[in-house]
Image (cartoon, rainbow, N blue to C red):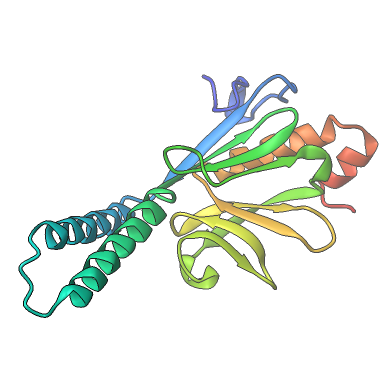
Length: 195
């Protein structure tokens, strides 16, 4: 049987050590955000309808404000939610890469030589981070939150943390730690969190 790193599983489900050439990939998605995208599309449609059917008796200023407001709200909601309907995480021999949405933007690439350690976060909630999306909190670091549930926390040293929700966070942590161990004595200490 193969896991998402490409490493083979032995008896008891233990994964054999990964080589630097193998890649671990994972993702997480949130279907509820599609409802917000539909609301954004509705605002866009309303803005277009107002612009086309301009039989307002209130005057041109009210019409322009309504059209611009609907179009702006629609674009912000539609593209803001589509960018965070899912996240892809990729761990290879060089970096941890996080891509959001269908076109992969925003994207964060963290070289492994900047990673001190990685750990499992059993419960990540959008409420603790101030909502879905790309978030920053002074006391918690930076995060990509697309749903509530488990994820990973990557320690970048000097108190800087990067958190991301992802399915199979145990596999991601294992892949990062394995790659840090293969980096040599300092990497082995970092993988265990002994910095």
